[in-house]
Structure formats: structure tokens, C-alpha cells
Length: 150
Image 1 (cartoon, rainbow, N blue to C red):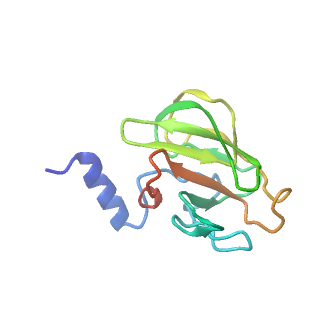
Image 2 (cartoon, helix red, strand yellow; image 1 turned 135 degrees about the vertical axis):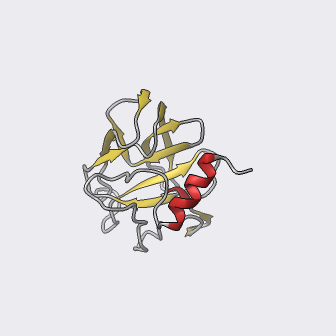
């Protein structure tokens, strides 16, 4: 027997949108970054020697980032890219999902958050990567593909 969450997720996928809210304020969907000089934004795309284990969502510089689902902020997260640069982000956990969102400056790092609530704003990337499409990087905590939820 399928759970209610699984059935809801399947229904939303058939409608062309995932169960998460739109992450970038002012956008009508969670659009994956197309290919540019720095690579492609889809999951499992080649990034130099590695595969991209996240999805890049198009979002304007300093745009408000919305919580994709209700849950708890679980502190700051960061990662160092192959270029040695630090990427800021936040981790959100619920009973169903665990996600890290990078290239965002959160308003806060701890506490409860509701689906669609403003989390912070998008950090501009052009200072480091001239010509890159501004975006958020969305990564599941377990490394799986988040595309089906977007």
C-alpha cells in the first residue's frame, strides 16, 4: 500500500510540478539552469572530473529564496568547490526530506520554517564566475536526485 505522501508526489509529478514550493521568489517554476560555460545545471551532469550531485535552479541575484517544504533549519552548511572557493548554504530537514541549498545567504540558520517562507537571498556568482547564470544549488542530504520534487 502506498503512503499518502507517495501518492501526492506521484499526482504532482503527473501535473508537471513537484511537491515543493517554488524556491526563487518572482519565478513561476523551479527552472533548471541550462548549460553555460561552467557546465549544466541538471543532476548527474559532468563537472570537470566529477558528476554534479545537485540541481541548479535559475534565480536572480539577491532574490528571496523560499523554503521548499516545511521543516526545521539545521544550521549552516558549506562546501569548498574544486576551485577552492567556499559556497554558503542552509540545511532543512523534515520527516520526509533533507536538503541543502547553496548560494544563499540565510536570514537565520536554526528553527522551524514553513513551506514558502523566505529563507534568505541569492548570493551573486558573477564576481567569481563571469557569465554564469545566477542560481541556487539544491542537493539532497543523501546525494540522490532532487529533480522529482521540484
